[in-house]
Image: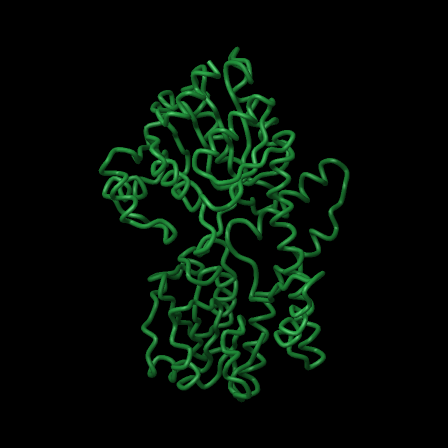
Length: 434
């Protein structure tokens, strides 16, 4: 059975199913389809399925040309029919893993995917979880769901974990370019998963088990979150000491060893950084260990949106204006530049707070045509001299490349720059840095 599946993978006749067609699942599906595999994407959102059938991409990192060509050839399909999972030789789970309001892991999407697979399970399938989660999820959740039907893992069924490493908007490192980590329930599971991903990815690294593979992802993102918290805290300290944090970072990064630059901002966003460290600290707490540094970093980063609101209030106050009734124009509502992803964006918290304080709020984002804040649906306005000039304050939250910043500087009365995108306009008194 193992040799049969390996042969199918080698000659590209293995049917690959990917559950979840978001920022991780769709690029992965496209890479496998490009390599010659027949790939079926499974999703509960009919809009995504419809887009793929029409040959349309809804993710900037994937071109519609690729989707159209692969869909036309039959190499890329999409469905909501879970019974088709039985026809798959490989099933890869790429579903969201958010946090509950209680700041505890919400693995309900993983559980639902595991139940769907179990209802349509057959011998000889390889199941890989890619969704970021706490160490032990594959063993404690996936394995019991799939291993209770008489199938022996490593002989009749193969289970592994391989953390996604997608960086939306990164033009240099796409799915196929980023080394892949894999760890299986058994050594055979690990080797089979390694062999699968080696068909589309240049370098595949194996670790001892699924828990190690799960921990790799959490280390990567916790490393970033903690260092961003450090630089955010230093930004607050520099503000008190009348120092320019951006100048300090630029000087420090000239050191050729022992230093890696991180940058302050209005807060963390996206699916990973606000959530993943909390998954780790939650799991550590269950083992009787308090991850104090991780939790402190999360607290510091979560304060940044509120600091930005205070910065707006202070800047308006300097101009003898109150925030209440002032027109505030927000530039960029996505969590990072040049992508259309608004998940966990700090813009949500900032704009919600501005509305609570009765500011007159507008926004411009070239990649997001409409944006909902606390039930209020806003539409992106055109970036014109009139719209900028009629605003009491312009707040740059996302430093998209295709924004006319010179027009903003020329036309605005007051600018809060949270991303240092206006660094070329030194000495301009109407620009307030983070």
